Length: 462
Ligand code: BES
Ligand code: MN
Ligand code: ZN
Image 1: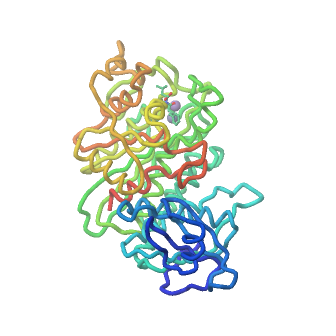
Image 2 (image 1 turned 90 degrees about the vertical axis):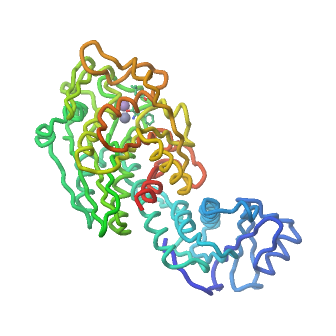
Image 3 (image 1 turned 120 degrees about the horizontal axis):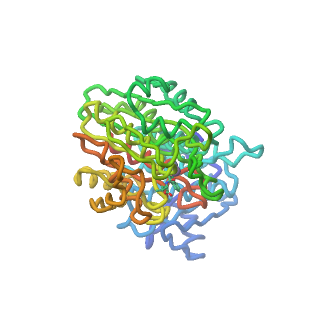
Protein backbone atom coordinates (compact mmCIF):
# COMPACT_ATOMS: atom_id res chain seq x y z
CA UNK A 1 0.00 0.00 0.00
CA UNK A 2 1.32 3.39 -0.99
CA UNK A 3 0.55 6.38 1.21
CA UNK A 4 0.48 9.81 -0.41
CA UNK A 5 -0.17 13.38 0.61
CA UNK A 6 -2.05 15.73 -1.70
CA UNK A 7 -4.19 18.80 -1.01
CA UNK A 8 -7.15 18.38 -3.31
CA UNK A 9 -7.94 15.04 -4.83
CA UNK A 10 -11.63 14.45 -4.46
CA UNK A 11 -12.02 12.26 -7.51
CA UNK A 12 -11.60 8.82 -6.07
CA UNK A 13 -13.15 5.44 -5.51
CA UNK A 14 -13.84 6.13 -1.84
CA UNK A 15 -13.72 9.44 -0.02
CA UNK A 16 -13.14 8.88 3.71
CA UNK A 17 -14.34 11.70 5.95
CA UNK A 18 -14.86 12.09 9.69
CA UNK A 19 -17.70 13.12 11.94
CA UNK A 20 -17.36 14.37 15.48
CA UNK A 21 -20.37 13.91 17.76
CA UNK A 22 -22.75 16.87 17.62
CA UNK A 23 -21.04 18.33 14.57
CA UNK A 24 -21.68 18.11 10.85
CA UNK A 25 -19.27 16.56 8.37
CA UNK A 26 -17.46 18.48 5.65
CA UNK A 27 -19.67 16.96 2.93
CA UNK A 28 -23.21 18.23 2.21
CA UNK A 29 -24.24 14.90 0.76
CA UNK A 30 -23.12 13.00 3.85
CA UNK A 31 -24.92 15.46 6.12
CA UNK A 32 -28.11 15.11 4.12
CA UNK A 33 -28.28 11.32 4.01
CA UNK A 34 -26.17 9.92 6.83
CA UNK A 35 -26.72 12.52 9.52
CA UNK A 36 -30.17 14.03 8.82
CA UNK A 37 -31.98 11.02 7.32
CA UNK A 38 -30.25 8.09 9.05
CA UNK A 39 -29.24 9.81 12.28
CA UNK A 40 -25.58 8.77 12.08
CA UNK A 41 -24.08 10.17 15.28
CA UNK A 42 -20.35 9.71 14.75
CA UNK A 43 -19.63 7.97 18.04
CA UNK A 44 -16.01 6.94 18.16
CA UNK A 45 -15.32 4.01 15.80
CA UNK A 46 -18.79 3.97 14.17
CA UNK A 47 -18.72 3.80 10.38
CA UNK A 48 -21.25 4.74 7.70
CA UNK A 49 -20.80 3.85 4.05
CA UNK A 50 -22.85 5.51 1.31
CA UNK A 51 -22.93 5.20 -2.45
CA UNK A 52 -23.03 8.63 -4.08
CA UNK A 53 -24.79 7.55 -7.31
CA UNK A 54 -23.09 10.24 -9.33
CA UNK A 55 -23.89 13.05 -6.89
CA UNK A 56 -20.20 13.39 -5.92
CA UNK A 57 -16.84 12.98 -7.63
CA UNK A 58 -16.20 9.98 -5.33
CA UNK A 59 -18.08 6.72 -5.98
CA UNK A 60 -18.56 6.14 -2.28
CA UNK A 61 -18.23 8.13 0.91
CA UNK A 62 -17.11 6.40 4.10
CA UNK A 63 -17.74 8.33 7.31
CA UNK A 64 -15.72 7.46 10.40
CA UNK A 65 -17.01 8.47 13.81
CA UNK A 66 -14.36 10.46 15.67
CA UNK A 67 -16.42 10.70 18.89
CA UNK A 68 -16.32 13.72 21.17
CA UNK A 69 -14.02 16.41 19.82
CA UNK A 70 -12.51 17.19 23.24
CA UNK A 71 -11.57 13.50 23.71
CA UNK A 72 -9.89 13.10 20.34
CA UNK A 73 -6.13 12.52 20.32
CA UNK A 74 -3.37 10.87 18.27
CA UNK A 75 -4.22 7.40 19.60
CA UNK A 76 -7.85 7.84 18.50
CA UNK A 77 -6.61 9.00 15.10
CA UNK A 78 -4.59 5.81 14.67
CA UNK A 79 -7.52 3.61 15.70
CA UNK A 80 -9.98 5.50 13.50
CA UNK A 81 -7.80 5.22 10.40
CA UNK A 82 -7.27 1.52 11.13
CA UNK A 83 -11.06 1.08 11.38
CA UNK A 84 -11.49 2.85 8.05
CA UNK A 85 -8.87 0.69 6.33
CA UNK A 86 -10.54 -2.48 7.62
CA UNK A 87 -13.86 -1.24 6.27
CA UNK A 88 -12.20 -0.49 2.91
CA UNK A 89 -10.94 -4.08 2.86
CA UNK A 90 -14.49 -5.35 3.45
CA UNK A 91 -15.77 -3.49 0.40
CA UNK A 92 -12.68 -4.53 -1.61
CA UNK A 93 -11.69 -0.94 -2.36
CA UNK A 94 -8.29 -0.34 -3.94
CA UNK A 95 -7.93 3.45 -3.63
CA UNK A 96 -9.18 5.98 -1.13
CA UNK A 97 -8.74 9.63 -0.21
CA UNK A 98 -8.84 10.55 3.49
CA UNK A 99 -10.10 14.11 3.88
CA UNK A 100 -10.43 14.88 7.60
CA UNK A 101 -11.58 18.28 8.89
CA UNK A 102 -8.94 18.61 11.60
CA UNK A 103 -5.91 20.81 11.96
CA UNK A 104 -3.66 18.98 14.45
CA UNK A 105 -0.50 17.10 13.50
CA UNK A 106 -1.89 13.60 13.48
CA UNK A 107 -0.22 12.46 10.25
CA UNK A 108 2.23 10.08 11.89
CA UNK A 109 -0.56 8.28 13.80
CA UNK A 110 -2.75 8.16 10.72
CA UNK A 111 -0.04 6.51 8.62
CA UNK A 112 0.79 4.02 11.38
CA UNK A 113 -2.90 3.13 11.76
CA UNK A 114 -3.28 2.59 8.02
CA UNK A 115 -0.24 0.32 7.82
CA UNK A 116 -1.20 -1.65 10.94
CA UNK A 117 -4.64 -2.36 9.52
CA UNK A 118 -3.41 -3.20 6.02
CA UNK A 119 -1.07 -5.85 7.46
CA UNK A 120 -1.58 -9.51 6.61
CA UNK A 121 0.78 -12.46 6.83
CA UNK A 122 -0.19 -14.08 3.53
CA UNK A 123 3.23 -15.01 2.18
CA UNK A 124 2.45 -18.72 2.46
CA UNK A 125 -1.17 -18.59 1.26
CA UNK A 126 -2.15 -19.20 -2.34
CA UNK A 127 -5.06 -16.83 -1.94
CA UNK A 128 -3.68 -13.47 -0.81
CA UNK A 129 -5.44 -11.10 1.57
CA UNK A 130 -7.06 -7.95 0.19
CA UNK A 131 -4.70 -4.96 0.24
CA UNK A 132 -5.27 -1.35 -0.70
CA UNK A 133 -3.11 -0.07 -3.57
CA UNK A 134 -3.02 3.56 -2.56
CA UNK A 135 -4.39 5.95 0.01
CA UNK A 136 -4.04 9.72 0.01
CA UNK A 137 -4.26 12.06 2.99
CA UNK A 138 -5.26 15.65 2.25
CA UNK A 139 -4.45 17.36 5.54
CA UNK A 140 -1.14 16.06 6.83
CA UNK A 141 2.42 17.11 6.04
CA UNK A 142 4.72 14.93 3.97
CA UNK A 143 7.19 14.84 6.89
CA UNK A 144 4.71 13.42 9.40
CA UNK A 145 3.54 10.82 6.91
CA UNK A 146 7.09 9.73 6.10
CA UNK A 147 7.85 9.25 9.80
CA UNK A 148 4.62 7.29 10.21
CA UNK A 149 5.59 5.07 7.29
CA UNK A 150 8.98 4.31 8.87
CA UNK A 151 7.19 3.33 12.10
CA UNK A 152 4.56 1.29 10.26
CA UNK A 153 7.19 -0.49 8.19
CA UNK A 154 9.21 -1.28 11.33
CA UNK A 155 6.14 -2.90 12.87
CA UNK A 156 5.53 -4.90 9.70
CA UNK A 157 9.18 -5.97 9.70
CA UNK A 158 8.89 -7.23 13.29
CA UNK A 159 5.49 -8.86 12.74
CA UNK A 160 6.64 -10.71 9.62
CA UNK A 161 9.66 -12.04 11.44
CA UNK A 162 7.77 -13.18 14.54
CA UNK A 163 5.06 -14.78 12.36
CA UNK A 164 7.65 -16.67 10.31
CA UNK A 165 7.84 -20.33 11.33
CA UNK A 166 10.84 -21.49 13.36
CA UNK A 167 11.95 -23.76 10.53
CA UNK A 168 12.88 -20.57 8.63
CA UNK A 169 13.48 -17.95 11.34
CA UNK A 170 16.51 -19.74 12.84
CA UNK A 171 19.34 -18.08 14.82
CA UNK A 172 21.40 -18.02 11.60
CA UNK A 173 18.52 -16.30 9.79
CA UNK A 174 18.26 -13.60 12.45
CA UNK A 175 22.02 -13.04 12.17
CA UNK A 176 21.77 -12.80 8.39
CA UNK A 177 18.92 -10.30 8.63
CA UNK A 178 20.92 -8.20 11.12
CA UNK A 179 23.96 -8.21 8.84
CA UNK A 180 21.88 -7.09 5.88
CA UNK A 181 20.55 -3.95 7.57
CA UNK A 182 22.30 -0.99 6.00
CA UNK A 183 23.65 1.85 8.09
CA UNK A 184 24.61 -0.26 11.12
CA UNK A 185 27.85 -1.83 12.30
CA UNK A 186 27.00 -5.45 13.01
CA UNK A 187 29.02 -8.22 14.63
CA UNK A 188 27.85 -11.81 14.84
CA UNK A 189 29.56 -14.01 17.40
CA UNK A 190 29.70 -17.75 16.66
CA UNK A 191 29.58 -20.56 19.23
CA UNK A 192 33.36 -20.54 19.81
CA UNK A 193 33.32 -16.75 20.33
CA UNK A 194 30.42 -17.08 22.75
CA UNK A 195 32.42 -19.70 24.68
CA UNK A 196 35.41 -17.35 24.83
CA UNK A 197 33.20 -14.56 26.17
CA UNK A 198 32.16 -16.86 29.02
CA UNK A 199 28.45 -16.89 28.31
CA UNK A 200 27.77 -20.20 30.01
CA UNK A 201 24.08 -19.56 30.64
CA UNK A 202 23.24 -18.62 27.04
CA UNK A 203 25.30 -21.50 25.64
CA UNK A 204 23.56 -24.07 27.84
CA UNK A 205 20.13 -23.11 26.51
CA UNK A 206 21.21 -23.53 22.87
CA UNK A 207 23.23 -26.73 23.27
CA UNK A 208 20.32 -29.11 22.67
CA UNK A 209 19.63 -27.88 19.14
CA UNK A 210 21.23 -28.81 15.82
CA UNK A 211 20.98 -25.11 14.87
CA UNK A 212 23.94 -23.33 16.50
CA UNK A 213 23.48 -20.19 18.61
CA UNK A 214 24.39 -16.72 17.31
CA UNK A 215 25.13 -13.68 19.45
CA UNK A 216 24.21 -10.57 17.48
CA UNK A 217 25.44 -7.06 18.23
CA UNK A 218 24.23 -4.20 15.98
CA UNK A 219 25.33 -0.63 16.51
CA UNK A 220 23.73 2.54 15.23
CA UNK A 221 25.68 5.78 15.70
CA UNK A 222 23.89 9.10 15.09
CA UNK A 223 25.60 12.42 14.32
CA UNK A 224 25.73 13.97 17.81
CA UNK A 225 24.77 11.17 20.17
CA UNK A 226 23.04 12.70 23.20
CA UNK A 227 22.38 9.37 24.83
CA UNK A 228 23.81 5.88 24.67
CA UNK A 229 21.39 3.04 25.01
CA UNK A 230 21.35 -0.73 24.55
CA UNK A 231 18.24 -2.65 23.48
CA UNK A 232 18.21 -6.39 24.16
CA UNK A 233 15.60 -8.63 22.55
CA UNK A 234 14.90 -12.19 23.73
CA UNK A 235 15.75 -14.36 20.74
CA UNK A 236 14.54 -17.89 21.42
CA UNK A 237 13.72 -18.98 17.88
CA UNK A 238 11.74 -21.90 19.23
CA UNK A 239 10.89 -22.69 22.85
CA UNK A 240 9.92 -26.34 23.21
CA UNK A 241 10.67 -26.07 26.92
CA UNK A 242 13.76 -28.28 26.53
CA UNK A 243 13.86 -31.46 28.64
CA UNK A 244 11.15 -29.91 30.83
CA UNK A 245 9.11 -30.08 27.66
CA UNK A 246 5.96 -28.01 27.26
CA UNK A 247 2.54 -29.58 26.70
CA UNK A 248 1.48 -29.47 23.03
CA UNK A 249 -1.01 -26.65 23.48
CA UNK A 250 1.57 -24.36 25.12
CA UNK A 251 4.22 -25.14 22.49
CA UNK A 252 1.98 -24.24 19.59
CA UNK A 253 2.86 -20.54 19.43
CA UNK A 254 6.46 -20.79 20.59
CA UNK A 255 7.90 -19.68 17.26
CA UNK A 256 7.00 -16.25 18.65
CA UNK A 257 9.55 -16.54 21.48
CA UNK A 258 11.85 -14.31 19.45
CA UNK A 259 9.36 -11.43 19.36
CA UNK A 260 11.71 -9.32 21.49
CA UNK A 261 14.49 -9.94 18.96
CA UNK A 262 12.12 -9.15 16.09
CA UNK A 263 11.24 -5.88 17.83
CA UNK A 264 14.90 -4.92 18.26
CA UNK A 265 15.66 -5.75 14.61
CA UNK A 266 12.66 -3.70 13.48
CA UNK A 267 13.75 -0.76 15.64
CA UNK A 268 17.39 -0.92 14.48
CA UNK A 269 16.50 -0.90 10.78
CA UNK A 270 14.16 2.06 11.37
CA UNK A 271 16.85 4.00 13.27
CA UNK A 272 19.14 3.71 10.27
CA UNK A 273 16.41 5.53 8.30
CA UNK A 274 15.38 8.09 10.94
CA UNK A 275 18.95 9.06 11.91
CA UNK A 276 18.25 10.31 15.46
CA UNK A 277 21.04 11.83 17.60
CA UNK A 278 21.73 8.75 19.69
CA UNK A 279 24.03 5.76 19.98
CA UNK A 280 21.95 2.60 20.04
CA UNK A 281 23.14 -0.97 20.47
CA UNK A 282 20.82 -3.79 19.42
CA UNK A 283 21.67 -7.09 21.10
CA UNK A 284 20.23 -10.55 20.52
CA UNK A 285 21.34 -13.84 22.04
CA UNK A 286 19.66 -16.11 19.48
CA UNK A 287 19.20 -19.86 19.96
CA UNK A 288 16.62 -22.65 20.17
CA UNK A 289 15.50 -24.38 23.35
CA UNK A 290 15.22 -28.05 22.33
CA UNK A 291 15.22 -31.47 24.02
CA UNK A 292 17.92 -33.86 22.83
CA UNK A 293 20.88 -35.95 24.01
CA UNK A 294 22.97 -32.80 24.21
CA UNK A 295 20.43 -30.63 26.05
CA UNK A 296 21.16 -28.91 29.32
CA UNK A 297 19.55 -30.70 32.21
CA UNK A 298 17.67 -29.86 35.38
CA UNK A 299 20.29 -29.75 38.14
CA UNK A 300 23.10 -28.49 35.89
CA UNK A 301 25.09 -25.57 37.26
CA UNK A 302 25.83 -22.81 34.74
CA UNK A 303 28.26 -19.91 35.05
CA UNK A 304 27.14 -16.64 33.47
CA UNK A 305 29.47 -14.03 31.95
CA UNK A 306 29.68 -12.10 35.25
CA UNK A 307 30.80 -15.24 37.13
CA UNK A 308 27.50 -15.84 38.95
CA UNK A 309 26.40 -19.47 39.09
CA UNK A 310 22.89 -20.73 38.36
CA UNK A 311 21.38 -24.09 39.22
CA UNK A 312 18.96 -25.15 36.50
CA UNK A 313 15.63 -25.75 38.20
CA UNK A 314 13.57 -25.82 35.01
CA UNK A 315 14.88 -25.86 31.44
CA UNK A 316 11.75 -24.00 30.32
CA UNK A 317 12.90 -20.87 32.15
CA UNK A 318 15.45 -20.39 29.38
CA UNK A 319 14.80 -16.79 28.38
CA UNK A 320 16.24 -15.35 31.57
CA UNK A 321 19.40 -17.45 31.09
CA UNK A 322 20.05 -16.07 27.61
CA UNK A 323 19.16 -12.54 28.78
CA UNK A 324 21.50 -12.87 31.77
CA UNK A 325 24.54 -13.10 29.50
CA UNK A 326 23.19 -10.48 27.10
CA UNK A 327 22.68 -8.08 30.04
CA UNK A 328 26.26 -8.66 31.26
CA UNK A 329 27.50 -7.92 27.74
CA UNK A 330 25.37 -4.76 27.39
CA UNK A 331 26.49 -3.41 30.77
CA UNK A 332 30.10 -3.50 29.55
CA UNK A 333 29.40 -1.23 26.54
CA UNK A 334 29.52 2.00 28.51
CA UNK A 335 25.88 2.86 27.80
CA UNK A 336 23.68 5.01 30.09
CA UNK A 337 20.61 2.85 29.78
CA UNK A 338 19.69 -0.74 28.97
CA UNK A 339 16.22 -1.95 27.98
CA UNK A 340 15.41 -5.62 27.52
CA UNK A 341 12.22 -6.77 25.84
CA UNK A 342 11.15 -10.39 26.13
CA UNK A 343 8.31 -12.89 25.89
CA UNK A 344 9.53 -13.95 29.29
CA UNK A 345 6.83 -15.38 31.53
CA UNK A 346 3.43 -17.01 31.27
CA UNK A 347 2.89 -15.43 34.70
CA UNK A 348 2.96 -11.95 33.16
CA UNK A 349 0.31 -13.06 30.69
CA UNK A 350 -1.81 -14.43 33.55
CA UNK A 351 -1.45 -11.14 35.43
CA UNK A 352 -2.03 -8.63 32.62
CA UNK A 353 -3.65 -10.61 29.82
CA UNK A 354 -3.06 -9.60 26.21
CA UNK A 355 -3.79 -5.95 27.04
CA UNK A 356 -0.61 -4.77 28.73
CA UNK A 357 3.10 -5.53 28.94
CA UNK A 358 4.73 -5.81 32.38
CA UNK A 359 7.53 -3.38 33.22
CA UNK A 360 10.22 -3.62 35.90
CA UNK A 361 13.66 -2.14 36.43
CA UNK A 362 16.12 -0.46 38.76
CA UNK A 363 15.23 3.19 38.15
CA UNK A 364 11.71 4.47 38.79
CA UNK A 365 12.19 7.59 36.67
CA UNK A 366 13.30 5.59 33.67
CA UNK A 367 10.43 3.13 34.16
CA UNK A 368 7.93 6.01 34.33
CA UNK A 369 9.38 7.50 31.15
CA UNK A 370 9.11 4.15 29.32
CA UNK A 371 5.50 3.74 30.47
CA UNK A 372 4.63 7.30 29.41
CA UNK A 373 6.25 6.78 26.01
CA UNK A 374 4.27 3.57 25.56
CA UNK A 375 1.02 5.39 26.31
CA UNK A 376 1.77 8.12 23.76
CA UNK A 377 2.75 5.44 21.25
CA UNK A 378 -0.50 3.51 21.61
CA UNK A 379 0.80 0.63 23.73
CA UNK A 380 -0.13 -0.18 27.32
CA UNK A 381 2.61 -0.94 29.83
CA UNK A 382 2.08 -1.61 33.51
CA UNK A 383 4.68 -1.60 36.25
CA UNK A 384 5.03 -4.80 38.28
CA UNK A 385 6.69 -4.87 41.70
CA UNK A 386 10.21 -6.08 42.43
CA UNK A 387 9.94 -6.84 46.14
CA UNK A 388 13.13 -8.61 47.18
CA UNK A 389 11.10 -11.41 48.81
CA UNK A 390 10.28 -12.74 45.34
CA UNK A 391 13.92 -13.83 45.17
CA UNK A 392 13.66 -16.13 48.21
CA UNK A 393 12.33 -19.13 46.34
CA UNK A 394 15.16 -18.86 43.80
CA UNK A 395 17.84 -19.38 46.45
CA UNK A 396 19.95 -22.47 45.80
CA UNK A 397 21.86 -24.68 48.23
CA UNK A 398 24.62 -25.37 45.75
CA UNK A 399 24.84 -22.31 43.45
CA UNK A 400 24.29 -18.55 43.68
CA UNK A 401 20.69 -18.93 42.55
CA UNK A 402 18.22 -21.20 40.74
CA UNK A 403 16.57 -20.14 37.51
CA UNK A 404 13.02 -20.55 38.86
CA UNK A 405 11.23 -20.53 42.17
CA UNK A 406 7.63 -20.36 43.27
CA UNK A 407 4.90 -20.40 40.61
CA UNK A 408 3.38 -17.35 42.27
CA UNK A 409 4.64 -13.91 41.32
CA UNK A 410 6.54 -15.46 38.42
CA UNK A 411 6.91 -12.27 36.36
CA UNK A 412 8.43 -10.40 39.30
CA UNK A 413 10.73 -13.30 40.17
CA UNK A 414 12.03 -13.30 36.58
CA UNK A 415 12.65 -9.55 36.87
CA UNK A 416 14.65 -10.05 40.07
CA UNK A 417 16.63 -12.84 38.42
CA UNK A 418 17.59 -10.54 35.52
CA UNK A 419 18.65 -7.80 37.94
CA UNK A 420 21.45 -10.08 39.19
CA UNK A 421 23.16 -9.48 35.83
CA UNK A 422 22.74 -5.71 35.62
CA UNK A 423 25.61 -3.49 36.75
CA UNK A 424 26.09 0.28 36.90
CA UNK A 425 23.38 1.24 34.37
CA UNK A 426 19.77 2.32 34.42
CA UNK A 427 17.80 -0.71 33.34
CA UNK A 428 14.19 -1.42 32.32
CA UNK A 429 12.74 -4.85 31.59
CA UNK A 430 9.62 -5.24 29.42
CA UNK A 431 7.75 -8.57 29.54
CA UNK A 432 5.67 -8.90 26.35
CA UNK A 433 4.60 -12.54 26.83
CA UNK A 434 0.94 -11.50 26.70
CA UNK A 435 1.06 -8.78 24.06
CA UNK A 436 3.47 -10.08 21.39
CA UNK A 437 1.23 -12.69 19.81
CA UNK A 438 -2.56 -12.72 19.67
CA UNK A 439 -4.68 -15.81 19.21
CA UNK A 440 -7.69 -13.64 18.26
CA UNK A 441 -7.93 -10.25 16.52
CA UNK A 442 -7.73 -7.29 18.92
CA UNK A 443 -8.21 -3.59 18.10
CA UNK A 444 -6.04 -2.74 15.07
CA UNK A 445 -4.50 -6.22 15.02
CA UNK A 446 -5.30 -9.46 13.24
CA UNK A 447 -4.36 -12.69 15.03
CA UNK A 448 -0.63 -13.39 15.21
CA UNK A 449 2.38 -11.19 15.89
CA UNK A 450 1.75 -7.57 16.90
CA UNK A 451 5.18 -5.95 16.66
CA UNK A 452 4.98 -5.29 20.41
CA UNK A 453 7.47 -2.70 21.62
CA UNK A 454 8.47 -1.35 18.21
CA UNK A 455 6.58 1.95 18.41
CA UNK A 456 7.47 2.53 22.04
CA UNK A 457 11.19 1.81 21.71
CA UNK A 458 11.48 3.90 18.54
CA UNK A 459 9.80 6.86 20.22
CA UNK A 460 11.86 6.30 23.37
CA UNK A 461 15.16 6.41 21.49
CA UNK A 462 14.07 9.51 19.55
N1 BES B 1 8.56 -18.30 26.45
C1 BES B 1 8.00 -18.65 27.69
C2 BES B 1 7.02 -17.62 28.24
C3 BES B 1 5.76 -17.43 27.45
C4 BES B 1 4.60 -18.11 27.83
C5 BES B 1 5.69 -16.55 26.41
C6 BES B 1 3.43 -17.92 27.10
C7 BES B 1 4.53 -16.35 25.69
C8 BES B 1 3.38 -17.03 26.05
C9 BES B 1 9.10 -18.83 28.74
O1 BES B 1 10.32 -19.27 28.26
C10 BES B 1 8.62 -19.90 29.68
O2 BES B 1 8.48 -20.99 29.27
N2 BES B 1 8.40 -19.51 30.93
C11 BES B 1 7.95 -20.42 31.92
C12 BES B 1 8.75 -20.18 33.16
C13 BES B 1 8.52 -21.19 34.23
C14 BES B 1 9.13 -22.51 33.85
C15 BES B 1 9.14 -20.65 35.50
C16 BES B 1 6.47 -20.14 32.15
O3 BES B 1 6.08 -18.98 32.15
O4 BES B 1 5.72 -21.09 32.30
MN1 MN C 1 10.43 -21.42 28.16
ZN1 ZN D 1 10.71 -18.83 26.30
